[in-house]
Image (cartoon, rainbow, N blue to C red):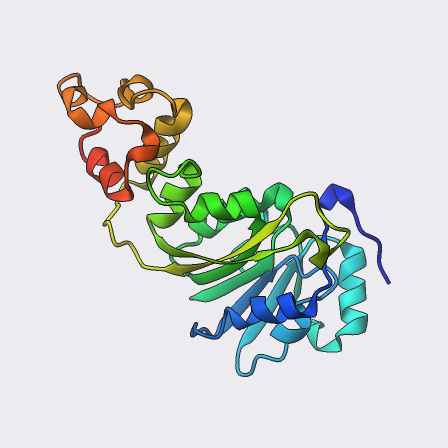
Length: 250
């Protein structure tokens, strides 16, 4: 078989019902190319390999798991990229969809990778620690709404699909999990200065309990800071609000 490595945040799905439910989350999507992140022991991989008429690849860092997958599922040979998702180059030319039971210790970083590749990532289905999944899907004004919420929702429609209980994994994690689906909406807010937008959002939430003008005062001219919107907290601003502020930055 294989060993479970805590250093890689490995908690492998053992509940076949949940595995099938995750894979069925792809049913509404149209795609020709599919990337699985962290196939591990192949819990959902065995179903993904059966999807007809697509090009499939999987990114896996752990050599032991790669050997296990190739012996257990011969169809995967030649389709595994032996690397970290955080370091690998874009796996396909053109549009692709992404799916995975993401290692919780790097799940937020994986999302930033998705944002980096957003011109080509048509959609993504991912399992996260539940509180992270809730954060990504949270609306403005919600206590979970934060940097990830704004940045992801600026380009993707986010759906929280379902919870996953601890006992569905081996070994059981200490937290519940949640599966979300991201669908690329293009660039609906016409954001052209991405670096400035990212900086604005991250700076705004740097002091999330204070009025917006405190953390962002160095980003705007004094007269702009008089606007009443700067009396709000970062968590009360919508994506549209942040896009509007972007146009007023120095």
